Image 1 (cartoon, rainbow, N blue to C red):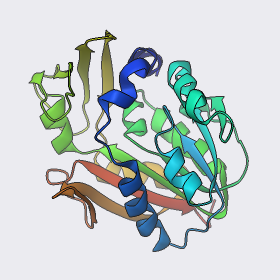
Image 2: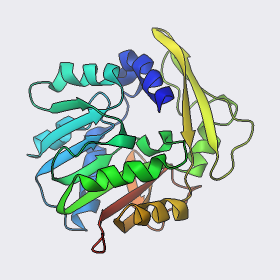
Image 3: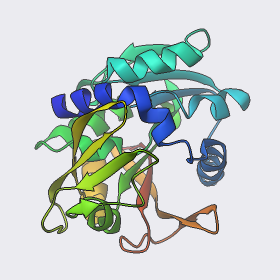
Image 4: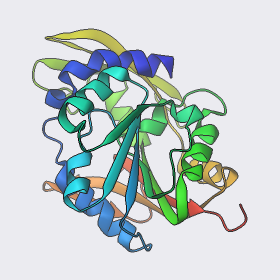
Length: 253
């Protein structure tokens, strides 16, 4: 995760511009509709790996109380500039997540868990997020699919991941399930840096959730079709670009 901290400190000055096409209002509405199927209650949100806070506004507009945390002080500085008066922010490592309180929803969006490349790191992160859930609360996180790794981490420039004057350059000669891969970001106004991520097959991820004291309640694939975000079950790692996981504290915990 030290690699992730350094990468996102360097990424922070251009992050919002790099991702300007991402529609967080649409994304949030789709995720909340899925969460409503599983009994989500409006209240407090803990946004783990919140970055520059791009998911804050849609939730604040819906009446949620939001707290954010991130490993990168550079990303949090951008979030603070935009939302410092309305959202409590903290520097925190997802592998050693403090208990900030009890939250009706804890989420980690945009492949936060894929940066957990070391042995045992995913389990520690899931355990920490589970510990922040209020009774009956839900945890939601997403992970990059094998298809996305093959299209965006394989050797060469990824047109889908590149943006404007910046390029996303995959560095892997071969991508297979469960591997760890790197991609390089470079371009105008940003210091070249490398993103290192690990692919987690669905069966492995579900087992890790259960080991962390979570009851998996939904596993869905996420894709975009005609500018719409679709969640479909069961997930297909070659069709979908993300897999979305939803869990709650296990009754056996």
